[in-house]
Length: 555
Image 1 (tube, rainbow, N blue to C red):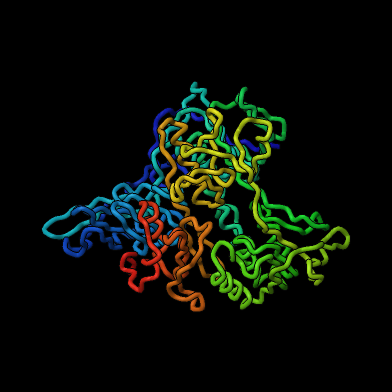
Image 2 (spheres, helix red, strand yellow):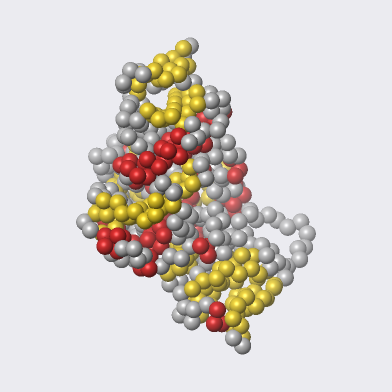
Protein backbone atom coordinates (compact mmCIF):
# COMPACT_ATOMS: atom_id res chain seq x y z
CA UNK A 1 0.00 0.00 0.00
CA UNK A 2 1.18 3.52 -0.79
CA UNK A 3 2.24 5.68 2.15
CA UNK A 4 1.06 9.28 1.77
CA UNK A 5 2.80 11.83 4.00
CA UNK A 6 0.46 14.80 4.27
CA UNK A 7 -1.14 17.04 6.84
CA UNK A 8 -3.73 19.79 6.21
CA UNK A 9 -2.21 23.25 6.34
CA UNK A 10 -4.53 26.24 6.81
CA UNK A 11 -2.07 29.01 7.68
CA UNK A 12 -1.50 31.12 4.55
CA UNK A 13 1.38 33.18 5.88
CA UNK A 14 5.00 32.89 4.79
CA UNK A 15 7.42 31.07 7.05
CA UNK A 16 10.94 32.19 7.82
CA UNK A 17 12.77 29.12 9.05
CA UNK A 18 16.05 29.81 10.79
CA UNK A 19 16.99 26.32 11.89
CA UNK A 20 17.22 22.96 10.21
CA UNK A 21 15.04 21.30 12.83
CA UNK A 22 11.29 20.99 12.19
CA UNK A 23 9.21 23.80 13.63
CA UNK A 24 7.18 22.81 16.67
CA UNK A 25 4.58 24.61 18.67
CA UNK A 26 6.21 26.10 21.79
CA UNK A 27 4.90 24.78 25.08
CA UNK A 28 6.34 27.62 27.10
CA UNK A 29 7.92 31.01 26.66
CA UNK A 30 11.47 30.81 25.37
CA UNK A 31 14.27 33.15 26.26
CA UNK A 32 15.64 34.96 23.20
CA UNK A 33 19.24 34.22 22.34
CA UNK A 34 21.63 36.91 23.50
CA UNK A 35 23.81 38.64 20.95
CA UNK A 36 27.56 38.52 21.33
CA UNK A 37 29.74 41.11 19.60
CA UNK A 38 33.45 40.48 19.42
CA UNK A 39 36.45 42.13 17.81
CA UNK A 40 37.89 39.54 15.42
CA UNK A 41 40.70 41.31 13.58
CA UNK A 42 42.16 44.61 12.52
CA UNK A 43 41.11 46.31 9.31
CA UNK A 44 44.52 45.70 7.79
CA UNK A 45 44.53 41.95 8.56
CA UNK A 46 42.48 41.13 5.46
CA UNK A 47 43.03 42.42 1.95
CA UNK A 48 40.45 42.35 -0.84
CA UNK A 49 39.78 38.80 -2.01
CA UNK A 50 40.89 37.24 1.27
CA UNK A 51 39.01 35.28 3.94
CA UNK A 52 39.66 34.35 7.55
CA UNK A 53 38.02 31.91 9.97
CA UNK A 54 37.05 33.45 13.31
CA UNK A 55 34.96 32.21 16.24
CA UNK A 56 32.28 34.21 18.00
CA UNK A 57 29.83 32.80 20.54
CA UNK A 58 30.82 29.24 19.70
CA UNK A 59 30.16 29.77 15.99
CA UNK A 60 32.88 29.18 13.41
CA UNK A 61 32.49 32.15 11.08
CA UNK A 62 34.01 32.91 7.70
CA UNK A 63 35.00 36.56 7.47
CA UNK A 64 35.45 37.83 3.90
CA UNK A 65 36.72 41.13 2.49
CA UNK A 66 35.73 42.03 -1.04
CA UNK A 67 35.72 45.44 -2.73
CA UNK A 68 36.65 46.99 0.60
CA UNK A 69 33.58 45.61 2.40
CA UNK A 70 33.51 42.92 5.09
CA UNK A 71 30.89 40.19 5.27
CA UNK A 72 30.52 37.21 7.60
CA UNK A 73 28.77 33.89 7.06
CA UNK A 74 28.88 30.45 8.66
CA UNK A 75 32.30 28.85 8.39
CA UNK A 76 31.21 25.24 7.83
CA UNK A 77 29.73 23.86 4.61
CA UNK A 78 26.09 22.89 5.13
CA UNK A 79 26.59 19.66 3.18
CA UNK A 80 28.98 17.64 5.40
CA UNK A 81 30.47 20.39 7.58
CA UNK A 82 33.78 20.94 5.77
CA UNK A 83 35.70 24.09 6.82
CA UNK A 84 35.13 26.66 4.08
CA UNK A 85 38.37 28.44 4.99
CA UNK A 86 40.09 25.56 3.18
CA UNK A 87 38.02 26.19 0.06
CA UNK A 88 38.39 28.73 -2.71
CA UNK A 89 37.09 32.30 -2.82
CA UNK A 90 36.35 34.09 -6.08
CA UNK A 91 34.50 37.38 -5.79
CA UNK A 92 31.46 36.99 -3.54
CA UNK A 93 31.42 33.22 -3.78
CA UNK A 94 33.17 30.52 -1.75
CA UNK A 95 33.37 26.91 -2.92
CA UNK A 96 33.72 24.01 -0.50
CA UNK A 97 37.00 22.11 -1.04
CA UNK A 98 35.52 18.66 -0.41
CA UNK A 99 32.44 18.29 -2.60
CA UNK A 100 32.07 21.59 -4.46
CA UNK A 101 29.06 23.27 -2.83
CA UNK A 102 29.12 27.07 -3.35
CA UNK A 103 27.77 29.90 -1.20
CA UNK A 104 27.30 33.62 -1.66
CA UNK A 105 29.43 35.36 0.95
CA UNK A 106 27.11 38.37 1.09
CA UNK A 107 23.86 36.49 1.68
CA UNK A 108 24.99 33.01 2.70
CA UNK A 109 22.68 31.53 0.06
CA UNK A 110 23.66 28.22 -1.51
CA UNK A 111 24.40 28.69 -5.22
CA UNK A 112 25.84 25.33 -6.23
CA UNK A 113 25.38 21.85 -4.87
CA UNK A 114 25.49 19.32 -3.15
CA UNK A 115 23.51 20.28 -0.05
CA UNK A 116 20.19 21.95 0.58
CA UNK A 117 20.74 24.66 3.16
CA UNK A 118 22.27 28.13 3.21
CA UNK A 119 24.90 29.54 5.55
CA UNK A 120 23.83 31.77 8.44
CA UNK A 121 24.76 35.41 7.98
CA UNK A 122 26.31 37.57 10.71
CA UNK A 123 26.44 41.32 11.28
CA UNK A 124 29.79 43.03 10.72
CA UNK A 125 30.90 46.54 11.64
CA UNK A 126 34.21 48.36 11.36
CA UNK A 127 35.16 50.90 14.02
CA UNK A 128 38.46 52.65 14.64
CA UNK A 129 40.35 50.22 12.42
CA UNK A 130 38.88 47.15 14.13
CA UNK A 131 36.44 44.58 12.69
CA UNK A 132 33.59 43.36 14.89
CA UNK A 133 31.24 40.44 14.27
CA UNK A 134 27.94 39.91 16.08
CA UNK A 135 26.72 36.38 16.70
CA UNK A 136 24.20 34.65 18.96
CA UNK A 137 24.67 32.23 21.82
CA UNK A 138 22.93 29.61 19.73
CA UNK A 139 25.38 27.67 17.57
CA UNK A 140 23.59 27.87 14.23
CA UNK A 141 25.32 26.01 11.41
CA UNK A 142 22.62 26.11 8.72
CA UNK A 143 19.86 28.36 7.46
CA UNK A 144 16.83 27.36 5.43
CA UNK A 145 15.56 29.84 2.88
CA UNK A 146 12.12 31.28 3.54
CA UNK A 147 9.36 29.38 1.78
CA UNK A 148 5.69 29.82 1.00
CA UNK A 149 3.03 27.29 1.91
CA UNK A 150 0.25 25.78 -0.10
CA UNK A 151 -2.81 28.03 -0.29
CA UNK A 152 -6.11 26.11 -0.09
CA UNK A 153 -8.15 26.80 -3.19
CA UNK A 154 -5.12 27.04 -5.46
CA UNK A 155 -5.65 23.89 -7.50
CA UNK A 156 -2.57 24.07 -9.72
CA UNK A 157 -0.70 20.79 -9.18
CA UNK A 158 2.93 19.92 -9.81
CA UNK A 159 3.92 16.24 -9.68
CA UNK A 160 7.59 15.50 -9.09
CA UNK A 161 8.87 11.96 -9.63
CA UNK A 162 12.30 10.82 -8.43
CA UNK A 163 15.50 11.87 -6.63
CA UNK A 164 15.87 15.43 -8.01
CA UNK A 165 12.33 16.26 -6.93
CA UNK A 166 13.19 17.50 -3.42
CA UNK A 167 15.41 20.29 -4.75
CA UNK A 168 12.73 21.20 -7.27
CA UNK A 169 10.02 21.25 -4.58
CA UNK A 170 12.03 23.51 -2.29
CA UNK A 171 12.90 25.82 -5.18
CA UNK A 172 9.20 26.16 -6.00
CA UNK A 173 8.30 27.08 -2.43
CA UNK A 174 11.26 29.48 -2.18
CA UNK A 175 9.87 31.27 -5.24
CA UNK A 176 6.34 31.70 -3.86
CA UNK A 177 4.62 28.78 -5.53
CA UNK A 178 1.43 28.23 -3.51
CA UNK A 179 -0.15 25.32 -5.40
CA UNK A 180 -0.08 21.63 -4.67
CA UNK A 181 3.24 19.74 -4.78
CA UNK A 182 3.24 15.94 -4.87
CA UNK A 183 6.66 14.34 -4.59
CA UNK A 184 6.70 10.67 -5.59
CA UNK A 185 9.34 8.01 -4.89
CA UNK A 186 9.40 4.27 -5.42
CA UNK A 187 11.55 3.93 -2.28
CA UNK A 188 10.15 3.11 1.14
CA UNK A 189 11.80 6.11 2.78
CA UNK A 190 11.58 9.85 2.47
CA UNK A 191 14.27 11.34 0.17
CA UNK A 192 17.74 10.45 1.43
CA UNK A 193 21.41 11.01 0.64
CA UNK A 194 22.13 7.97 -1.51
CA UNK A 195 25.80 8.87 -1.93
CA UNK A 196 26.39 7.51 1.59
CA UNK A 197 24.90 4.09 0.90
CA UNK A 198 28.01 2.67 -0.79
CA UNK A 199 30.37 4.21 1.77
CA UNK A 200 28.57 3.32 5.03
CA UNK A 201 26.15 0.53 4.23
CA UNK A 202 25.02 0.05 7.82
CA UNK A 203 24.08 3.71 8.32
CA UNK A 204 20.82 4.36 10.17
CA UNK A 205 18.11 5.69 7.87
CA UNK A 206 17.50 8.74 10.06
CA UNK A 207 21.09 9.83 9.51
CA UNK A 208 20.75 9.93 5.72
CA UNK A 209 17.32 11.54 5.39
CA UNK A 210 17.62 14.83 3.52
CA UNK A 211 14.54 16.28 5.23
CA UNK A 212 12.39 15.13 8.12
CA UNK A 213 8.67 14.51 7.70
CA UNK A 214 7.74 17.54 9.83
CA UNK A 215 9.75 19.82 7.56
CA UNK A 216 7.94 18.63 4.45
CA UNK A 217 4.56 18.89 6.13
CA UNK A 218 5.36 22.39 7.34
CA UNK A 219 5.94 23.55 3.78
CA UNK A 220 3.01 21.75 2.24
CA UNK A 221 4.98 19.16 0.28
CA UNK A 222 3.20 15.83 -0.08
CA UNK A 223 5.37 12.73 -0.34
CA UNK A 224 4.11 9.46 -1.79
CA UNK A 225 6.45 6.55 -1.04
CA UNK A 226 6.52 3.02 -2.50
CA UNK A 227 4.88 4.31 -5.65
CA UNK A 228 6.27 3.60 -9.12
CA UNK A 229 5.18 5.29 -12.32
CA UNK A 230 3.70 3.06 -15.03
CA UNK A 231 2.80 5.53 -17.78
CA UNK A 232 2.17 9.17 -18.62
CA UNK A 233 -0.67 10.52 -20.74
CA UNK A 234 0.66 13.81 -22.04
CA UNK A 235 -2.64 14.85 -23.64
CA UNK A 236 -4.84 14.20 -20.60
CA UNK A 237 -1.98 15.34 -18.30
CA UNK A 238 -2.16 12.29 -16.06
CA UNK A 239 0.35 9.93 -14.47
CA UNK A 240 -0.65 6.31 -13.90
CA UNK A 241 1.18 4.33 -11.22
CA UNK A 242 1.72 0.57 -11.01
CA UNK A 243 -0.86 0.28 -8.22
CA UNK A 244 -3.53 1.71 -10.52
CA UNK A 245 -3.59 5.22 -9.05
CA UNK A 246 -4.07 8.01 -11.60
CA UNK A 247 -2.98 11.55 -10.74
CA UNK A 248 -3.62 14.66 -12.81
CA UNK A 249 -0.91 17.30 -13.17
CA UNK A 250 -0.51 20.82 -14.49
CA UNK A 251 3.27 20.48 -14.63
CA UNK A 252 5.39 17.36 -14.31
CA UNK A 253 9.02 16.70 -13.39
CA UNK A 254 10.50 13.37 -14.47
CA UNK A 255 13.61 12.54 -12.44
CA UNK A 256 13.32 8.77 -12.26
CA UNK A 257 17.09 8.25 -12.23
CA UNK A 258 18.63 5.04 -13.48
CA UNK A 259 18.40 1.35 -12.71
CA UNK A 260 21.30 -1.04 -12.31
CA UNK A 261 22.36 -2.70 -15.53
CA UNK A 262 21.61 -6.43 -15.18
CA UNK A 263 24.19 -9.15 -15.50
CA UNK A 264 23.59 -11.20 -18.65
CA UNK A 265 24.65 -14.72 -17.77
CA UNK A 266 23.17 -17.96 -16.47
CA UNK A 267 22.49 -17.81 -12.73
CA UNK A 268 22.10 -14.03 -12.61
CA UNK A 269 18.71 -14.52 -10.95
CA UNK A 270 19.97 -16.64 -8.05
CA UNK A 271 19.38 -15.56 -4.47
CA UNK A 272 22.16 -13.32 -3.09
CA UNK A 273 22.96 -11.74 -6.45
CA UNK A 274 22.67 -8.12 -5.31
CA UNK A 275 22.41 -4.62 -6.74
CA UNK A 276 22.83 -1.41 -4.76
CA UNK A 277 19.96 0.95 -5.66
CA UNK A 278 18.36 1.99 -2.38
CA UNK A 279 18.60 1.94 1.40
CA UNK A 280 17.10 -1.53 1.70
CA UNK A 281 19.70 -2.89 -0.73
CA UNK A 282 22.55 -1.37 1.30
CA UNK A 283 21.29 -2.79 4.57
CA UNK A 284 20.77 -6.21 2.97
CA UNK A 285 24.24 -6.30 1.41
CA UNK A 286 25.78 -5.28 4.74
CA UNK A 287 23.95 -8.06 6.58
CA UNK A 288 24.50 -10.80 4.00
CA UNK A 289 28.18 -9.97 3.40
CA UNK A 290 29.38 -10.10 7.00
CA UNK A 291 31.69 -13.10 7.27
CA UNK A 292 30.81 -14.19 3.73
CA UNK A 293 32.75 -14.70 0.52
CA UNK A 294 31.85 -11.70 -1.61
CA UNK A 295 32.40 -11.33 -5.34
CA UNK A 296 31.93 -7.88 -6.89
CA UNK A 297 31.31 -7.71 -10.62
CA UNK A 298 32.45 -4.42 -12.13
CA UNK A 299 35.05 -1.81 -11.21
CA UNK A 300 32.70 1.17 -11.10
CA UNK A 301 32.87 3.85 -8.43
CA UNK A 302 30.07 2.18 -6.47
CA UNK A 303 31.72 -1.23 -6.81
CA UNK A 304 35.06 0.03 -5.51
CA UNK A 305 33.43 1.90 -2.60
CA UNK A 306 31.54 -1.26 -1.65
CA UNK A 307 34.77 -3.29 -1.89
CA UNK A 308 36.49 -0.85 0.42
CA UNK A 309 33.61 -0.90 2.88
CA UNK A 310 33.41 -4.72 3.00
CA UNK A 311 37.19 -5.28 3.07
CA UNK A 312 37.20 -5.63 6.87
CA UNK A 313 33.76 -7.21 7.22
CA UNK A 314 33.51 -10.01 4.66
CA UNK A 315 35.52 -13.23 4.84
CA UNK A 316 36.92 -12.35 1.43
CA UNK A 317 36.29 -9.75 -1.28
CA UNK A 318 37.03 -10.47 -4.92
CA UNK A 319 36.57 -8.01 -7.79
CA UNK A 320 36.02 -8.99 -11.43
CA UNK A 321 36.67 -6.27 -14.01
CA UNK A 322 36.81 -6.13 -17.80
CA UNK A 323 39.65 -3.56 -17.74
CA UNK A 324 43.13 -3.85 -16.26
CA UNK A 325 42.42 -1.34 -13.50
CA UNK A 326 39.42 0.35 -11.84
CA UNK A 327 38.34 3.72 -13.31
CA UNK A 328 40.77 3.19 -16.19
CA UNK A 329 38.59 4.74 -18.89
CA UNK A 330 37.42 7.71 -16.80
CA UNK A 331 40.40 8.57 -14.58
CA UNK A 332 43.28 6.91 -16.39
CA UNK A 333 45.80 4.13 -15.88
CA UNK A 334 47.80 5.70 -13.03
CA UNK A 335 44.84 6.48 -10.77
CA UNK A 336 43.31 3.10 -11.57
CA UNK A 337 46.54 1.33 -10.65
CA UNK A 338 46.74 3.28 -7.36
CA UNK A 339 43.12 2.40 -6.53
CA UNK A 340 43.74 -1.28 -7.15
CA UNK A 341 46.84 -1.20 -4.97
CA UNK A 342 44.95 0.53 -2.12
CA UNK A 343 42.33 -2.21 -2.14
CA UNK A 344 44.86 -5.02 -2.51
CA UNK A 345 46.56 -3.74 0.64
CA UNK A 346 43.25 -4.57 2.37
CA UNK A 347 43.30 -8.09 0.91
CA UNK A 348 40.83 -7.39 -1.89
CA UNK A 349 41.67 -9.72 -4.79
CA UNK A 350 41.26 -8.66 -8.44
CA UNK A 351 40.57 -10.71 -11.56
CA UNK A 352 41.22 -8.10 -14.25
CA UNK A 353 40.52 -8.21 -18.00
CA UNK A 354 37.96 -10.88 -17.27
CA UNK A 355 34.22 -11.42 -17.01
CA UNK A 356 31.50 -13.67 -15.64
CA UNK A 357 30.47 -16.69 -17.72
CA UNK A 358 28.05 -18.19 -15.20
CA UNK A 359 26.91 -18.03 -11.60
CA UNK A 360 26.28 -21.47 -10.14
CA UNK A 361 24.02 -22.11 -7.21
CA UNK A 362 22.86 -24.66 -4.70
CA UNK A 363 19.31 -24.74 -3.39
CA UNK A 364 18.62 -21.54 -5.30
CA UNK A 365 21.49 -19.60 -3.67
CA UNK A 366 24.82 -18.45 -5.04
CA UNK A 367 27.62 -20.99 -4.59
CA UNK A 368 30.32 -20.02 -7.09
CA UNK A 369 31.17 -17.73 -9.99
CA UNK A 370 32.65 -19.14 -13.20
CA UNK A 371 34.90 -16.67 -15.05
CA UNK A 372 35.24 -16.43 -18.80
CA UNK A 373 38.78 -17.81 -18.54
CA UNK A 374 37.40 -20.92 -16.81
CA UNK A 375 38.46 -20.16 -13.25
CA UNK A 376 35.91 -20.84 -10.53
CA UNK A 377 35.51 -18.54 -7.51
CA UNK A 378 33.61 -19.66 -4.39
CA UNK A 379 30.97 -17.07 -3.48
CA UNK A 380 28.15 -16.54 -1.00
CA UNK A 381 27.19 -13.07 -2.24
CA UNK A 382 27.61 -11.51 -5.70
CA UNK A 383 27.30 -7.72 -5.99
CA UNK A 384 26.80 -6.34 -9.49
CA UNK A 385 27.93 -2.82 -10.43
CA UNK A 386 28.33 -2.64 -14.21
CA UNK A 387 26.57 0.63 -14.97
CA UNK A 388 23.08 2.08 -15.05
CA UNK A 389 20.25 2.47 -17.57
CA UNK A 390 18.05 5.61 -17.50
CA UNK A 391 14.56 4.82 -16.18
CA UNK A 392 12.52 6.04 -19.13
CA UNK A 393 10.66 2.92 -20.30
CA UNK A 394 7.33 4.31 -19.07
CA UNK A 395 7.61 7.10 -21.65
CA UNK A 396 7.95 4.87 -24.71
CA UNK A 397 4.28 5.23 -25.63
CA UNK A 398 4.50 9.04 -25.49
CA UNK A 399 6.02 11.65 -27.80
CA UNK A 400 8.59 12.69 -25.17
CA UNK A 401 11.97 12.67 -26.94
CA UNK A 402 14.28 9.86 -25.82
CA UNK A 403 17.83 9.46 -27.16
CA UNK A 404 19.62 6.27 -28.20
CA UNK A 405 20.88 5.71 -24.64
CA UNK A 406 17.31 5.84 -23.25
CA UNK A 407 17.89 9.28 -21.69
CA UNK A 408 15.16 11.94 -21.78
CA UNK A 409 16.28 14.88 -23.93
CA UNK A 410 15.90 18.34 -22.37
CA UNK A 411 16.95 21.88 -23.31
CA UNK A 412 18.92 24.32 -21.18
CA UNK A 413 15.77 25.06 -19.16
CA UNK A 414 15.29 21.36 -18.31
CA UNK A 415 12.21 21.29 -20.54
CA UNK A 416 11.34 18.29 -22.68
CA UNK A 417 9.80 18.66 -26.12
CA UNK A 418 6.33 18.30 -24.54
CA UNK A 419 4.73 21.35 -22.93
CA UNK A 420 4.69 21.39 -19.11
CA UNK A 421 6.93 18.33 -18.79
CA UNK A 422 10.41 18.87 -17.34
CA UNK A 423 13.10 16.30 -16.57
CA UNK A 424 16.17 16.23 -14.32
CA UNK A 425 18.93 14.05 -12.90
CA UNK A 426 20.43 10.78 -14.11
CA UNK A 427 17.55 10.13 -16.52
CA UNK A 428 18.27 13.16 -18.74
CA UNK A 429 20.55 14.18 -21.55
CA UNK A 430 21.11 17.92 -21.13
CA UNK A 431 23.21 20.60 -22.86
CA UNK A 432 26.46 21.11 -20.92
CA UNK A 433 27.82 24.63 -21.45
CA UNK A 434 31.34 23.44 -20.63
CA UNK A 435 31.47 21.46 -23.88
CA UNK A 436 29.68 23.90 -26.16
CA UNK A 437 26.19 22.84 -25.06
CA UNK A 438 26.67 19.28 -26.27
CA UNK A 439 23.99 17.00 -24.82
CA UNK A 440 25.41 14.67 -22.19
CA UNK A 441 24.06 12.12 -19.71
CA UNK A 442 25.96 12.24 -16.41
CA UNK A 443 24.95 10.43 -13.23
CA UNK A 444 26.13 12.79 -10.50
CA UNK A 445 24.37 13.79 -7.28
CA UNK A 446 25.45 17.43 -7.61
CA UNK A 447 24.08 17.65 -11.14
CA UNK A 448 20.74 16.14 -10.13
CA UNK A 449 20.29 18.90 -7.55
CA UNK A 450 21.33 21.57 -10.05
CA UNK A 451 18.83 20.19 -12.55
CA UNK A 452 16.07 20.15 -9.94
CA UNK A 453 16.68 23.78 -9.06
CA UNK A 454 16.64 24.93 -12.70
CA UNK A 455 13.48 22.93 -13.41
CA UNK A 456 11.76 24.54 -10.42
CA UNK A 457 12.73 28.04 -11.50
CA UNK A 458 11.48 27.46 -15.02
CA UNK A 459 8.22 25.95 -13.83
CA UNK A 460 7.81 29.47 -12.42
CA UNK A 461 8.58 30.92 -15.88
CA UNK A 462 11.89 32.48 -14.85
CA UNK A 463 13.77 31.38 -17.99
CA UNK A 464 17.00 30.45 -16.20
CA UNK A 465 19.41 28.27 -18.18
CA UNK A 466 21.48 25.48 -16.63
CA UNK A 467 25.11 26.52 -16.17
CA UNK A 468 27.06 24.17 -13.96
CA UNK A 469 30.34 22.27 -13.92
CA UNK A 470 30.21 18.61 -12.88
CA UNK A 471 31.84 17.93 -9.50
CA UNK A 472 32.20 14.36 -8.32
CA UNK A 473 33.91 12.62 -5.41
CA UNK A 474 34.57 9.07 -4.31
CA UNK A 475 35.73 7.89 -0.88
CA UNK A 476 37.63 4.68 -0.17
CA UNK A 477 39.60 3.63 2.89
CA UNK A 478 39.75 7.16 4.25
CA UNK A 479 41.05 8.61 0.97
CA UNK A 480 38.98 10.79 -1.34
CA UNK A 481 39.36 11.44 -5.06
CA UNK A 482 37.75 14.69 -6.22
CA UNK A 483 36.91 15.34 -9.86
CA UNK A 484 35.57 18.28 -11.81
CA UNK A 485 34.86 18.98 -15.46
CA UNK A 486 33.98 16.70 -18.35
CA UNK A 487 36.87 14.56 -19.50
CA UNK A 488 35.27 12.39 -22.17
CA UNK A 489 37.66 12.02 -25.08
CA UNK A 490 40.72 13.30 -23.22
CA UNK A 491 43.99 12.40 -24.93
CA UNK A 492 46.58 13.07 -22.23
CA UNK A 493 46.93 13.42 -18.46
CA UNK A 494 49.40 15.83 -16.84
CA UNK A 495 50.24 14.97 -13.22
CA UNK A 496 51.45 17.12 -10.37
CA UNK A 497 52.52 15.18 -7.31
CA UNK A 498 52.47 11.41 -7.33
CA UNK A 499 49.89 8.63 -7.25
CA UNK A 500 52.51 6.49 -5.47
CA UNK A 501 52.54 9.01 -2.61
CA UNK A 502 48.74 9.35 -2.90
CA UNK A 503 49.00 13.09 -3.21
CA UNK A 504 48.40 14.34 -6.73
CA UNK A 505 46.60 16.67 -9.10
CA UNK A 506 45.77 15.31 -12.56
CA UNK A 507 44.87 17.56 -15.49
CA UNK A 508 42.92 15.92 -18.33
CA UNK A 509 43.89 17.40 -21.70
CA UNK A 510 41.93 17.58 -24.94
CA UNK A 511 42.80 19.80 -27.90
CA UNK A 512 45.63 21.41 -25.88
CA UNK A 513 43.24 22.53 -23.09
CA UNK A 514 42.37 21.28 -19.60
CA UNK A 515 38.85 19.84 -19.73
CA UNK A 516 38.79 18.13 -16.32
CA UNK A 517 40.87 17.53 -13.21
CA UNK A 518 41.13 14.97 -10.42
CA UNK A 519 43.01 15.11 -7.15
CA UNK A 520 43.85 13.38 -3.90
CA UNK A 521 45.17 15.32 -0.90
CA UNK A 522 45.60 18.41 -3.10
CA UNK A 523 42.80 20.65 -1.85
CA UNK A 524 41.47 23.11 -2.84
CA UNK A 525 42.86 22.65 -6.37
CA UNK A 526 39.82 20.89 -7.86
CA UNK A 527 37.43 23.37 -6.24
CA UNK A 528 39.47 26.22 -7.71
CA UNK A 529 39.51 24.63 -11.15
CA UNK A 530 35.74 24.11 -11.00
CA UNK A 531 35.26 27.85 -10.50
CA UNK A 532 37.64 28.68 -13.34
CA UNK A 533 35.86 26.29 -15.71
CA UNK A 534 32.49 27.70 -14.68
CA UNK A 535 33.70 31.20 -15.48
CA UNK A 536 34.72 30.05 -18.96
CA UNK A 537 38.43 30.49 -18.39
CA UNK A 538 40.63 28.53 -20.77
CA UNK A 539 43.39 26.55 -19.07
CA UNK A 540 46.09 25.47 -21.48
CA UNK A 541 48.17 22.33 -21.53
CA UNK A 542 51.25 24.55 -21.11
CA UNK A 543 49.82 25.95 -17.86
CA UNK A 544 49.16 22.44 -16.59
CA UNK A 545 52.70 21.33 -17.48
CA UNK A 546 54.38 24.33 -15.87
CA UNK A 547 56.12 23.95 -12.51
CA UNK A 548 54.62 27.32 -11.62
CA UNK A 549 51.03 26.79 -10.50
CA UNK A 550 50.58 30.32 -9.20
CA UNK A 551 47.75 30.77 -11.73
CA UNK A 552 45.79 28.21 -9.69
CA UNK A 553 46.13 30.37 -6.56
CA UNK A 554 46.27 27.52 -4.07
CA UNK A 555 48.24 27.66 -0.81
